[in-house]
Image 1 (cartoon, rainbow, N blue to C red):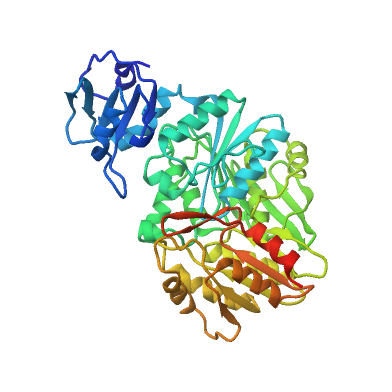
Image 2 (cartoon, rainbow, N blue to C red; image 1 turned 45 degrees about the vertical axis):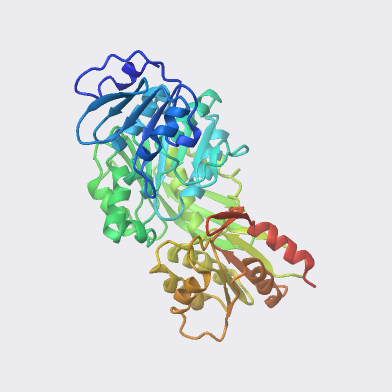
Amino acid sequence: MQLTDLLAGYLSRSFQIDIEVKDLALDSRKVKPGDLFFALPGSQTDGERYLVEAMVKQACAILKTGEQEAIQWQESVPIITLPNLLTHLGSLAAKFFGYPSRQLTMIGVTGTNGKTSCCYFLAQALTHLNKPCAIIGTLGYGFIHALHSTGMTTPDAITLQRCLKELVNQGAQAVVMEVSSHALMQHRVAGIDFEVAVFTNLTQDHLDYHGTMENYALAKRRLLHWPGLTKLVINYDDPEGRVWLQQADKKNKICLYAKKTQLAPLLAANSSLNYIVVKKAELSLAGMQLNFASTWGDGILNLDLLGQFNVSNLLAVMGVLGLLGFAKLEFVTAVKQLINVPGRMQCIRYAGKPLVIVDFAHTPDALEQVLTTLKAISKQKLICVFGCGGNRDRAKRPLMAAIAERYADLIVVTSDNPRNEDPQEIVTDIVQGFINRQAVYIELDREKAIWQAIRLGQAGDMVLIAGKGHETIQIIKDKQIPFDDVQKVKQALQMNP
């Protein structure tokens, strides 16, 4: 694409620059000859510091942000200043890659917990319904049998548009994407045409970034007000879900889902609302039986999934499928074939040993959801291993301790991803939340903590390893060290007498 064509409509006066743009780059280390380099300020460094490196690597042009439009030439390379460049990055990338999201059914899922499971389930269900669906999120991007890592829940705007283009070329007809609050605030999803938005819940997390719960909620609501959105699926059990309904464009098709809130009065007053609710849910170690009622008819599901939170996730999935026009029989048939998400209530069973469950729960609400589920079906001891991430919301640390103490019989506090914080200081914050430390063990080495927890248990007990789930690395200082909870658990179960 010609640089002049790419920038048409973004500058108040036209620049005739006959330069072919071969690709886009945000990282000067990855610039290739012919790339357009975006010199954007970051959280740690300013992209302008890397202009020379980008030019040495033969960037065809450089875009930077500033108060006024300008163009200057340096060693035959145009350096163009575009005000508010960050807000335009997504739409520029979308234009360069041929607006790939317009060729897809785009579903955005936001909320503190449940995003990954909803996306994983939706991708499977839509694919079963002959609408090949890929995902972009915590697990990576691609079709679920061939995921590639992106390093974050929602990638940067250029990577995102490149991924979407790649998925279109691979035959995707739909993409379901985790839309984090960071991504919404940092304009990473700008330029994406979402057809459906799903709101799962809002609980404490990321206050290190947003400052307050109100700011966190406002960030999530950016998806609610997304231009071109036509369908909304909202968890009405969550108080924030009621705000979403109040603020929703009434032209949208809306589906409310709930497992405990009575919707009858609301539905009687507004016949245009769609709904899906639990009539009865029976949970056991073998899985769940879910009896539901909906706009599209009633049904019963038997699934090999654990957890009340998965009841909510399944309701959200069926709500999306209903709004997309699938009949009840179609979406029930598809949902019955779902397999669980790696690292989400993943059960590891060995004869004569405690049952070990690996889960990604790393917020107070997620940890409580998992522990209450396990407590309800546990017949013996419930042992919990958890830690808290470094350089993240410190306020949640004692809250998670209090929750673990409320439900678990024994607790092993360990390291999660300490990053650049001292692991001992993180643990010091955590233990402030315990009332009685008699049943609490401290082991900073996560592998040793897993072994210790399994040794504390016996056949019939349950051991929850919380916090990292599917992750295969542990972040200590600036290093990413291979570490897989599932593999460590299997080793411990095999080796422990």
